[in-house]
Length: 86
Image (cartoon, rainbow, N blue to C red):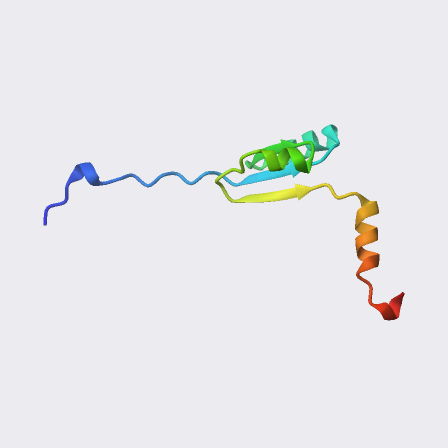
């Protein structure tokens, strides 16, 4: 069997990993963006979870950095305590 050179394909370059930063503090978003880009990562910035949900997610592997208010974290932690500890 003779291989047809027109059917051989060059493997596509995989998309670079993307870090998604969601935070309502613009200065913090920009600082994190600068940090991640300094090590060669792509970064997408969003000011809210709603903004992120409206966007089309990247096709590349990704990491999500999400701002969760301390108040909510403390409340969710205390609600998961066993009844014996309350």
